[in-house]
Length: 245
Image (cartoon, rainbow, N blue to C red; front, side):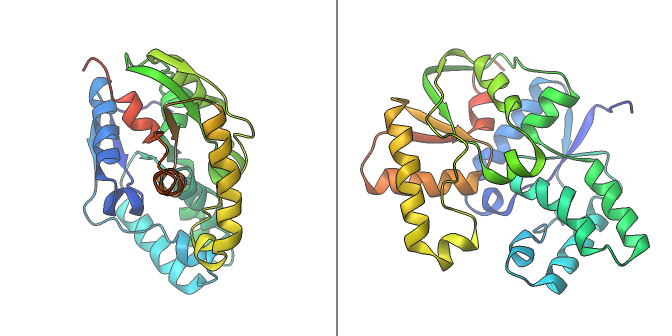
């Protein structure tokens, strides 16, 4: 399928509400590549929080709205593996008993990509001319890696960042304890899991930890801040958007 010079940005709720700078970084990345970005103002949540909490009726309503909003779009790109996993893998589950909606769900899922997956696998781009002078480690978010199989794509991009030293932390693919509602329902378990993650980040001697999901990074940053540890968290889009324009 021939790709157009335009993408439609699907903005994760956490980015829209708390970390808009990540969305702007994504836009700058595509501007570097000469690709126009559209961002429909009428988009809302993809329905993942409701789905994960067992509210299937509400999740279906959000999914139907998503498909209405993005129905006329070409490639849909999102800086969140968990949201892409929802659209790609769980919309078909929601509409498995409705043949017409099931086809819409499948078609929408095919057009929906996580940011690093789109850059590396679709656009065949690994070097964005980015620069970061420091030591970077990377956290594999669960839905990104296990849900949609994205693991090497972000690493390929990080290794091309000028001035950066990339170091793998121990157990990079272990959960950070966030899990959305999980961290609220089971705070003690979540905190214990996060303690292990933070120990591995510190052991890497990195000055920044990056990833592809702001939910995980927000969770990690919370404990780093509470402990007074001097490690920054940056979404991978923020790192890739740096350097020459």
